[in-house]
Image 1 (cartoon, protein in one colour):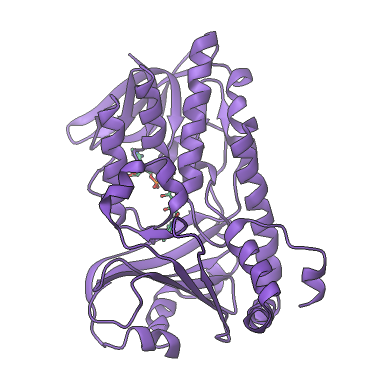
Image 2 (cartoon, helix red, strand yellow):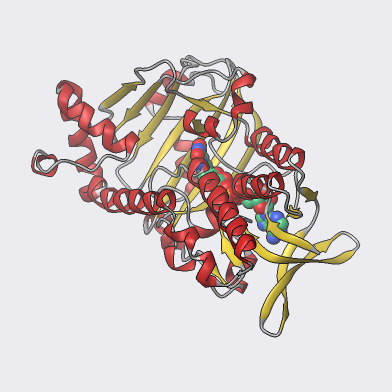
Length: 388
Ligand SMILES: Cc1cc2nc3c(=O)[nH]c(=O)nc-3n(C[C@H](O)[C@H](O)[C@H](O)COP(=O)(O)OP(=O)(O)OC[C@H]3O[C@@H](n4cnc5c(N)ncnc54)[C@H](O)[C@@H]3O)c2cc1C
């Protein structure tokens, strides 16, 4: 019998398991496959170092510059001012395994090659989970169950707390890690916005290796063929300047969806249950950035569970503190703002975004406003919309 079962050893589940184990709780961290590389850009802000100081010692290339292009190729360039403000890019397989190791070092028991597929229920209470393993199935019992198994979580649906995503609620992406000669600046990340809901990105990992991908969102998931978008991305003149070779070695490639509507705030908790990370929509609408918010959700869920153990009550009455935590409320608020801005940016085939980037090219004050909105969750000032 475990105190807590965490289904999914991705960033949100590993952080949650780590904090619980560090506080003396017996934690089962269930993972379908530690060798699966979660499709992603692997871009992470230095904000995450607070939760994983271990990342500092990896000496990753610091990305001090962000180059963003509108659909008509106006450039918005941002350089982080302080030397302590930057992002890094990591191979997700390495990042996820580092986070798992931190959880295991803290005392969590990792059960690999276990695919969670259902709850064990007694007297209408969820008292554990069932997993598939190579030799059959296994059962894990616990007082609290944390659902952290990502966007395609079966448990999240079976919990009754949330419904299946609709295609129009998602971002859908194709991405790859490629290798070869290029003319990118190792300290820069590149974004190319589109005249539809979506963008392409290129994140250099080291001198030769880079992560590249394209993504569509919402109704445009139906309107565009991802394979074609991906292939066409390489033919764009600005991209060709950076990736001038015709044959890049493919290290890895995959396609994957991500939640696009923001946090499912009505679905975060139930009796002795909490949903964290992507499984609950902790990915920023339109940017697709999720690592930081997912780790925060895992941390707050762990703290909420610790409080539930202290008072001996695992009912939704106690676990609702997760949703009402100040950091979770801030994420919910920021994501709502991002979602509403996305509609404005991409209006009229992306022409608003074109105008914003064009104005920002020549007007320093306006550029600051735009980068604050894009990168630091600032609310647009009153005159922002009237200028566009
Ligand atoms: C294409 C793409 C690009 C992205 N780029 C970025 C980026 O550059 N920066 C950024 O911050 N965010 C990015 N994101 C978002 C980020 O990847 C997610 O927000 C983050 O990985 C979510 O963490 P998580 O732990 O909640 O879920 P996941 O990372 O999905 O982890 C879930 C874990 O559960 C396991 N699992 C799944 N099902 C089961 C099961 N049934 N039983 C047991 N285990 C299971 C999985 O193997 C995985 O280890 C991107 C997402 C996508 C799809």
